Image 1 (cartoon, rainbow, N blue to C red):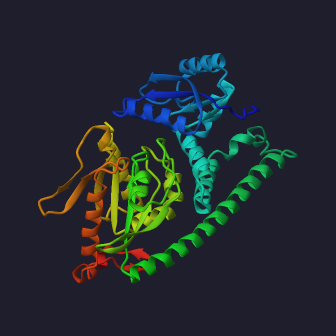
Image 2: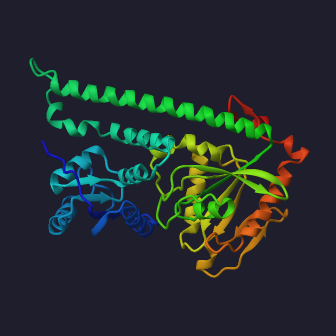
Image 3: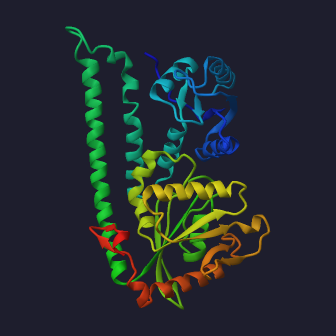
Length: 385
């Protein structure tokens, strides 16, 4: 049996081009993910293929090139910018003689490092267990062969079944705890609905500046940094607007291209603040050349979690980086569709506050009250509006 290495902070990155139009962007994002995990990048191996190799993903020649760099750099970890099957990871580790992980594992590791709240940690662990469940057999390949024959039943089969049973129990425990957290949020949400308090959620691609904007609006002091997934836990604060009263503002986890499905499922409870919001502020890095793709990716995830029905306004942040003036854009019906601002310098924040006053005023009108969302069994049914 191959003894898996514990891994180290020195890492070799591997990215293969299968003809995707956003390949260069994904490579840059892989570098930023590795930086966010505090890893020392010693090299990048790239290549072009028509399709992944079924056994080694990269093909034998490319694997030899990776192995040479691993040995020369004394790296203890190889990260693929792709999703690997359990068999591919096992085969690669045997060839490279070091720890091999894929993009999903890297993102899960970053989430595990950054989650601070009890609920966030529960959600990350649930996502990790979901990922581990598909790879549970890997550590016991030497025992798995002992499934048949007289006198050969027992150690391998028993250990695998025990591991699966323990994992299943832990998953159930985590889900039960998350249900209790969900019930607490439901009570809080009902109180807000009774008091007609408008709920606003900040959403956007990771590192778009959501937390910085959240701090500029609410003076919450949430952690903000120029790195991917700087904050994971949803933070909610009340914001008092002298002209309109109180609203509730929530800062949510950022999205990313190919966000692991296990994470989307695990964080669905947290993202309910987004689903149940009255208004989404979709924060965009206006200085990013990939902003259109990032907007599309965020809208894709919003549709996946069922939040695509919530009205949203684009907040073009970081205008100080490309010297754009603060301003407001409206459609042909005079509705605000986009606000250009800089959360860092404060330019345009007053315009955002004015917009919120306008939205809260409309939210509290009797005509709007009759069109408010209907909650049945804590679920939104737009067909009953």
